[in-house]
Every structure is written in structure tokens, then in C-alpha cells.
Amino acid sequence: MFQRVRLADSDPCPCGGGLYGACCAPLHRGERDASTAAELMAARYSAYAAHEADYVWRTWHPRYRPEVIHLDDAVEWLGLNIVETQAGGVDDREGVVEFEARFRDGDGSAVMRERSRFARRARRWVYVDGDVEYS
Ligand SMILES: [Zn+2]
Image (cartoon, rainbow, N blue to C red; front, side, top):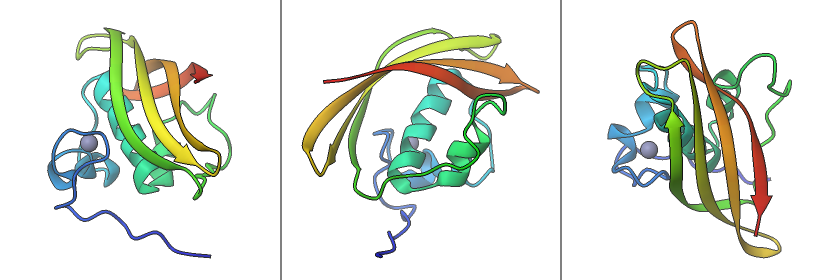
């Protein structure tokens, strides 16, 4: 078993939004909440990449989330591209974010495309579910 090193604040954020310490780290640490569905989507992507399983779990709608989040060490996340967003803004209660995430695993490189649904619960955005395609 190897232990993955946690990201430093001075590392590039996996979501592509700048330095980790000024981008998704404060969300992962619970210092602030995502203000839009797209921001939550990017922070959840970064959490997968940075192995912040706890963040993935707590930003998942309780009715839809698995009991345990399993992050596969064999998957390396290579980049995120947000394709489209619908609603999900600071005044909305629901939102949809479509994105592409490139990754590499034991079978090579691939792209995951997901249309994710988000909802606001107790003023916080949470991930509900999504339709996923691989190519
Ligand atoms: Zn980020």
C-alpha cells in the first residue's frame, strides 16, 4: 500500500482554477462553501483527484450518497472541462453541470462525461446524481 501525499497549498489545483490553497482547499477544509453548483462540481472533482474522500461524501445529497466513498488509487485525474451549466447560481435551488474529466487508469487514458444534478439543501449546494458516459 502506498499513501498518497496530500496536495500543498502551493500546488496547482486539480480543477485548473489556480493554486490549490486559493482554489478548492478552503472548500475541502470546510472553511467556506461553494456558492454555485459549478464551483461545487469543480471542488468535488478536485477532491477525487486529491483523495479528499470526506469532502466527496459530505457534499453528496444524503439520500443519494453511498455509505462509504471509495476512491480508486489506480485512477489518476488529468483535467476538468466544464461544458455547460444550467441554473445552479447563487439564487437558484437546483442546477445542472455537464463536464468532461480526463483520467488515466490501468487500461490507459479515457474521458468521463457527466451531466450532474445539484440541489441546494440548508443553503448549501450538494451533488444529487448524474448521467455518465465514457469515451
Ligand atoms: Zn480548484
